[in-house]
Length: 141
Image (cartoon, rainbow, N blue to C red; front, side):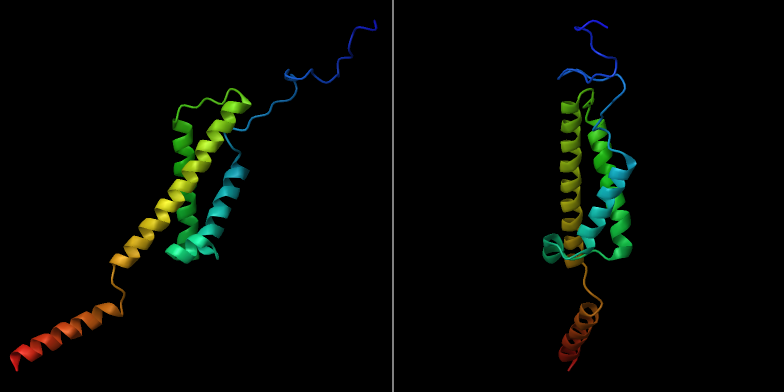
């Protein structure tokens, strides 16, 4: 072997890719997506600022909501047209995915909170009925 030849197993020069190693940041693995769902479930039902402001989501509702939020965010990032041919493009797609998850999470808790405020509780409904009956009784007397 001549002194200017490199052995076959030498590391690639900076900026070159090794033929035997591939790194892809987008799309995320199923394991990563499952971790995002788990974190969303913890955020929706845990002791978080969102829960303090908008109310906690019961565990039975948190899991399906988290899966829907993650799936919609993934689809939105995938449809955005970002082709992850390079690590930089993969990072852009991952950032879009992250922003979509956050936006959809916030939209979900806000809409759920608004719906809860708009719907009367079971204790409020009978009180309103009895007040209405009381007014009718006063007019009848």
